[in-house]
Amino acid sequence: MSRRVVREAVANWISSAQITTLNQVFTSFPKRINFQVNAFPGQNSRAAAVVFIENESESRIAIGGVGPMAQGGYGKGWKRVDYAIALQVFHHSLQRNAQDAMDDFDCLIDNIKDRLRAGQHTLGVENPNLIWQAAEPGIDVQYGEPLTNDSGATETWAAIRFVVTEMIES
Image (cartoon, rainbow, N blue to C red; front, side, top):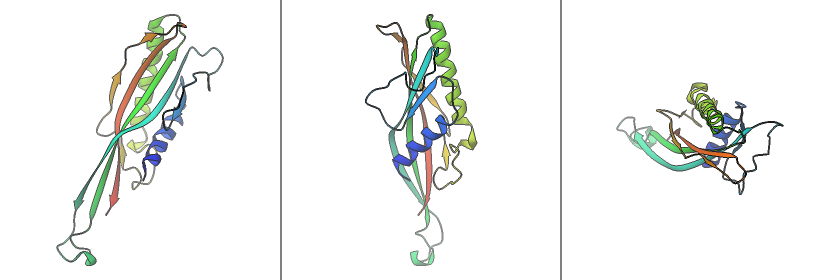
């Protein structure tokens, strides 16, 4: 599996849930986020999410007998590849009241976390050789301080962090 496949699996799983106010999911950082894209008339809060792989690590464990490698001995094992994901969420709200904007943001984050917990923690991927598990053993969220931009919109940011694990027979 490649980094691209991991980013696409995360993006597809999140976007297929059709989460209210999450209008766009990107597999890499766009040059610019246009919060009008996929927004409907009267939609006060809009968001975009970006799948970012912060780092990855590999480890291997050898299992099997003590015979020669050609006969299935000490060379067989599994390689575990962990991809540390930061799903960066950019929320833009035109709500008149900042508390309403924060309520919309909280609902968005809760819905994304619910989606990550769903689907047997595999992002809906049936093949365990592609994604063995995701969002296990946990989910961590970092929040940015809300701010009001020059046009009066409330903007809030979060990074939802979790691990996607691939197991490779090697």
